Length: 364
Ligand code: ADP
Ligand code: MG
Image (cartoon, rainbow, N blue to C red; front, side, top):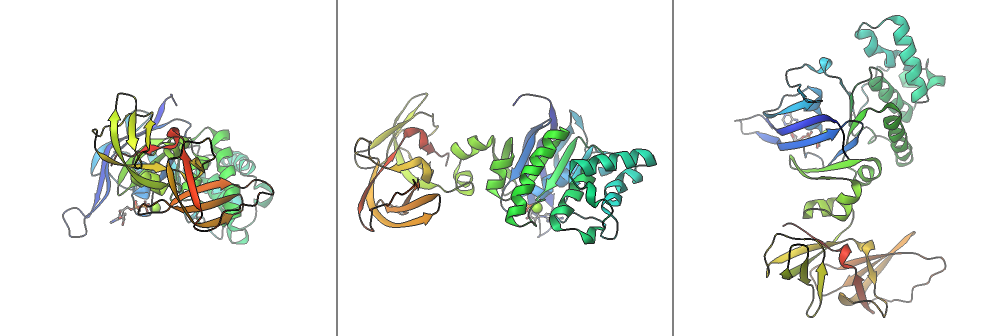
């Protein structure tokens, strides 16, 4: 995606409790450019530094090293209220005894906007989040999902350039969460505001984002569009954190500028059309998604042979766990066709076919 840059973090590090026994390196040399009008997601496990990065962008914390730019200007010296950035917190932080409309207008009044401007903006925001009918309800009289909408409306009301959303859907049940995912996409689209969204839920990240940054232990490991992150994970952590993956060791037997040839079994080699840094002879780990492998038919080139361990029916798909004489079972996931009854039994022999394009050679 080309375009103007909304937020730039340049080599940002954050150390809490520097020089004490409790020292924590919450962020380690984080550089990322987030484009204007982008739905950008920070994805990673609990404690990896997502909230810290948002708090630095918002101005609630200061970087130990590095700089943060908004539309090209350094903002590190600006206090939070002078940054054109707003945050939706995990717990919403609404005023329970005030009405929906009062909550949305509160920040605008604090900024000294005129009564009529506040009233107009509140009505517009109520419309945007479809809460007009409940404008005079108190916060403690509406549901969790409705509170979430109010929190969004309140954060959008001052028309920030960037909206930071820190796991805003985690308190909602699954169905409501799915609805709000669609709702958030719509809000981002309709307002044109840059969204920086934080989640530890990989499915949420893949379905909502223009681009995703995968984080672990204070570092960004990979940035890319959802399909890049899913199909071309750069290392084992990313491949493992996002979706299910088979990891198999292989050996590089030859390579050139545009491909590597791997030995996968005694007599099986596969040429993979992506270059790789490691030298010939090196053992590498490859990653294969269960749904991108298949049970071989007679015409397929067989990559692994094994025996069925068990079969798990999961509605849309069936998952086959296959012993291929490696440390871990190999999993193949097959979409269930209507009326198909699978004749395979435990310990039946199974051959597995894998297209070279489904093989990702990891960095490690
Ligand atoms: P995430 O949001 O990804 O779960 P955080 O950014 O909240 O992670 O935390 C990253 C790391 O920094 C964690 O190890 C956390 O304990 C630590 N941390 C966060 N805030 C503070 C703080 N104010 N003081 C000390 N350590 C902190
Ligand atoms: Mg957090």
